[in-house]
Image (cartoon, rainbow, N blue to C red; front, side, top):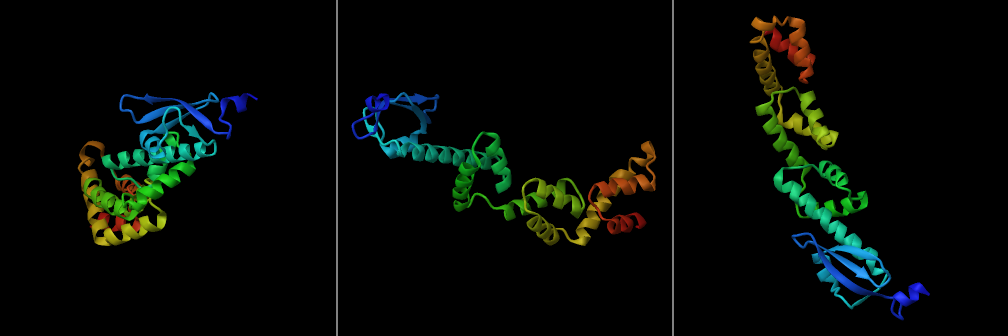
Length: 214
């Protein structure tokens, strides 16, 4: 009886209030005749044409809520991308940390991918070029870092193999070794310590032996 009294004869709900939430007016709280309420983005609200006094079918409410949350997640993703490049996996993790469900995130990121804003291959190339210049490391370390940032192993390995030649890795190892040997006067680093430090930088045994023999 309570549900019948709070709804129209056709079983619809009546919108009793539409209140703006937040200074920017991005969200609106829509109150219904059964005492329930729903938070919707302004764009979704206007698209659905919901105003005070209107009747809304119950079955449309979950759909509108999902559309609103998906659009919100999409905008969050685009905002994150406007500050720095991200992989798809990296964006998904940050959106999950912001409380979005996995289903909503996947729908939002699909749209962002369609717009061309997510490109893991381009991310890997850009990040790798910058990393080699600022922080010389071995191929193993570079692959590991790319994977930590959400790049799939196969893509990380192929990108490093393509952009980091053996000669380039040797130059990186020499750069690191030269910096380390400058510390020998103060810390008296022996060969074993130098070898260990280079190995932790991701250089292979073959690369390390080559530069140390040189």
